[in-house]
Image (cartoon, rainbow, N blue to C red; front, side, top):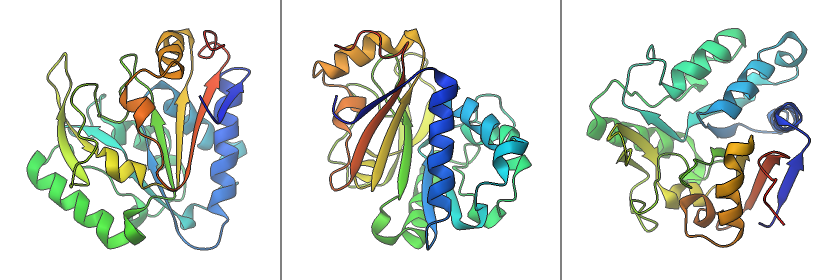
Length: 230
């Protein structure tokens, strides 16, 4: 995989991403960043909320968005926004007006339209400055699953269903993500090693196909996740 960065462990990886976020926050102009759910972002949130880090970020310059969300209320343990709120947002001085959550408790069809309108109203050309993505054991990213991803969708936000549980979700579409200026896939732990080996070999998964059309795509892995890469 091109542009792959291997870090000693998950602590080193999230510290690198935190430093990147801090640097981006001090650039001129507002920065629009889409966040992800999962174990590695959870570790990142805890670090950014710590005494050592929260003051390094210019929170006033950031607008925070989400790549996907489960159709549950924010109080539900499975809510991506709820997790970020509990671990990070409640502890840092970010304006409520800069937090653009997907409303998992709302009617999914109506929420897709509302979130797409919010993107259009705030983000020039609907191009995120930075999209942080995870990689599922099945090669999915956001809530874009193998065999169920429309790579030519004309929408920006759609309803998705988990292939095993059937859980309803909201997700940014592949074309919208691919318009991003920078895509960063994060993966840690030995449980990701097999799927990353398949992605490196050219397997046709969303986490392999979804790359920035006119921007940077990078993979940040710890040594355990990268163990099967040649």
